[in-house]
Length: 243
Image (tube, rainbow, N blue to C red; front, side, top):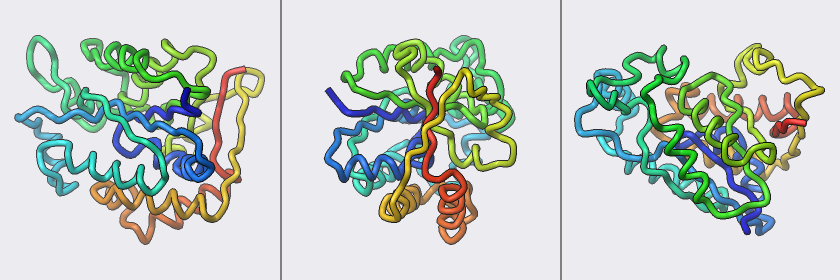
């Protein structure tokens, strides 16, 4: 039995959000599995939106470079990474028309498309994961469709045992978490305190995602102060669970 499984929609989400506690647990010798759901290769014909983002990220048309970034991050944190074969919502297409399910940035942060089958496939993948003492999924702050679908699939499989991390950097935006109305009589928050060493490891692991740091933070020199500032405000990293 593993100590904990963190479920990450994309190749960076869980590390961005709770890399500090992963580092602490890895140093203690706990068995930590980081499972990334949307880690499959994109199709050969990228949509205009996907092409523009690949150009911005400086990435080749497959997912190998992103997986290598994640492998480096896992090595820094001392955890094990595993990867699903289903592609990011950015690449998924309508099963009948072949049109992109999410053709605009706005659609990626809206209600999941009714023809998007990723949630069902991820539920099957989660069912096949090793048994663990703790399962942690995204709260889906920011409402990215993949975060929503991973959360729903995890709730279907793990039920009331599931815990949730706050999706960073989405939760760093003003009022982002308040809009979720996590009422104290329904939800319980636990602050996971972090040492300086834990925060350093989180920053170094996030920096491993070289293709994403500029887009998310405007560069590494801005990334570290933002992460450290958020950790100070929270008092560590916050995990949520339903009462």
